[in-house]
Image 1: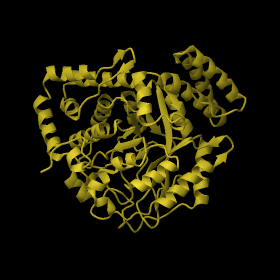
Image 2: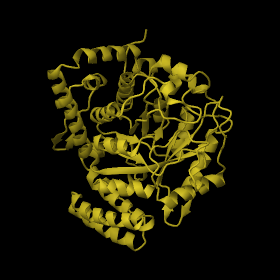
Image 3: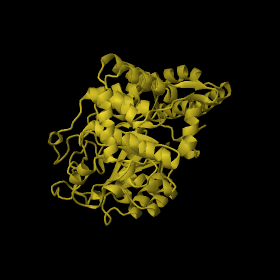
Image 4: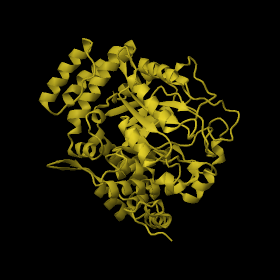
Length: 481
């Protein structure tokens, strides 16, 4: 029997099954305890101090009580608090990115993924470096500056050397005014040595979805291949941080296991990173299982409603207030609109989840990893965000200025993020408007920029930003604070 220990490097101890079961029992016992619920909500509220705005966050047990609570008045208070916290630390900025699928060769047997080894009718494809370059140019022509590269796990077809070569190719492509300034990496769990190589290659965040924290379910869902090793997979973030990667991104695939179990496990993982490394996850992703080739999501009986999904997003924002939250085009426009307000700070736009999909005029579906619900163009997504009052941001400045890991978190906690991220968002939006936007999008964006300049706290920063915006109109690019 393993004992719960958030400071342990053993997955069975920092994601402890008995602790999760005890947490769920405690949540059930207290889901109608209004006094306790009020005290938890009060603990999570932002507090303004001399050093800036501070949030204490919540433990996995406290957050699980809120998740179990279904008192309508209290749920509305949770939503209002999530929105307050989101505004306090991320303002109205929404970071934009796109996934880039390099290869769908995979040796694993994951039963929920169409790339599983036994799927013999899906076309297998691996991009050459020439094809990578063409995909990058297509993404740059859309206006993207930030990518998340994806690849199946296959030591022979997709070795670390291939991933590193692709990263080098991506960063090397300068097309017109386009450039990919940040490459995040979502590849299988690997060694400390390989994580060091990724760090040296200049990656941003290393992202790895747990899929499920329920070990018994995990082993059944991953019956064959190296991903079958639950502990090696779950302990990957510790190896990544040992390898020098400051920013790591967590996520579960909601729908595989009971959502309350997954929610508790996800927060325990965040607590573990904070306890061991002094900094929690840079991002948390919240994908739900979707239909794909050879995959029927109804085969998994743990799907969650849009209401439960929204509540999960709100409570992640409350429990882990400083982390970035990511939602992809798996979700529909209406769902994305709802959860952006409740805590999501990063979204994909104009995404294609097939290998080589961006160079195809029509959206290819034969190699898609999952069905894309939001199929709008990047320009349509940018315009939609602005019409909702958000600033679409293509900023990558913190990563390029070394403001990663605990340095980013201290910036966020001190409130100084407004003097960096807000003007950077406006300047990268201006670049997009000048180089890629449609006429209607440009008009809306120019008005938004003028209105948002007044929200930069420091007058000196505001004046420098205005100067940079004028220079962007003259054709100069890549200013940043």
